[in-house]
Image 1: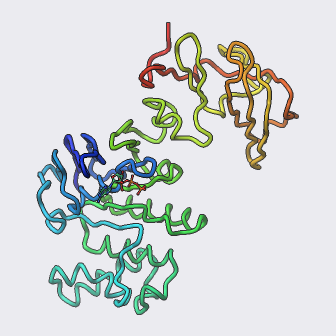
Image 2: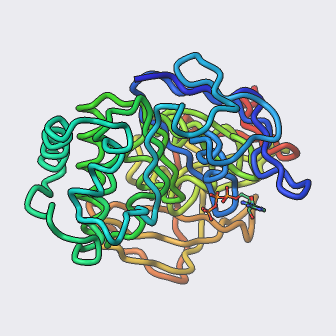
Amino acid sequence: MATVETRELVKRFDGAAAVDRIDLAVREGEFLVLLGPSGCGKTTLLRMLAGLETPTSGDILIGGRVVTRLPPRARDIAMVFQSYALYPHLSVYRNIAFPLKAAGMSKRETEEKVARAAAMFGIGHLLARKPRQLSGGERQRVALARAVVRNPVVFLLDEPLSNLDAKLRTSAREELQQFQRGLGTTTVYVTHDQIEAMGLGDRIAVLDHGRVHQLGTPAAVYHDPADIFVATFIGSPPMNLVRTDGVLCGFRPEHLLPLSCIDPAEALAPMPMTVTRIENLGADRLVYATLGAPNPETKVISRLPSTIDLPIESGRRYEFALCRRNFRYFDPQTGVARPAPS
Ligand code: ATP
């Protein structure tokens, strides 16, 4: 276990900053997710932590020690890539044993460690196979077993689940979380999938254009986004944004409900609206609408749980509302969150 820190970390490619002065402090044993759209700099940041990419400026510390100029092998980290990077000509056993062999470990100790890692990931019966004889999920487990086998102080994972189908992804997510908790190894995990980020991360760093917009718990980035980018990147559908009295107001679709469904003791913000489209998702209905005065033509989305069984039709007007405490406020110029106007 170790802390991971970056200080004013910058990486430029041909003059353009892929990582732009990032200060990050990952706690011991923490599962930190780097989340952001394609091209935001997640992989570049992870590769710098691993020692596979040299920073243009700034520093990286692992366990309090400056490692910025150290090669990957001197950092005591293990990295798992989206592609798994298994050696195709080696058996599963030899793939997992590879880092131990490279470190000069005895045959007996290697056998023990490989057996333990294989058992941990439920792949003990696959040790004689070659990677091409495995499913995507099995390959992923081999890659993870190879990463844990030498007990690194930090795991760096780059979209390790993205080759799996939706069902396998869910179980792999659960497994991964269990292993990480069990081992207590500090983990930095890259993904562009917010469900994965929300489900796995102790904290999430939300990145865009090489900068961290917010570093917080899944609940914090969802409920109290630091700016409009986070508010609209996190959540599907994203946070609604409505301009009122020179301020941008944000609210989550699940807070916008038919007036009759809200406790009248709450301070309410009425939102009369005309429904334009309804999507029935089973557990929820997404109600797309445009607001009436004073925000005509502003589009909003309401998420109604199926337990709210009111008939709602496209093309009709309804009285919707939300509790004022569910409003979030943003500066319309900078997009940064601000306190409620007094
Ligand atoms: P994705 O989710 O698509 O993998 P990402 O957030 O991981 O994206 P990076 O791969 O870190 O993004 O890339 C960040 C930026 O740096 C992009 O604009 C990319 O084109 C650029 N970039 C990355 N590697 C190089 C390179 N070796 N040479 C030049 N530009 C690069």
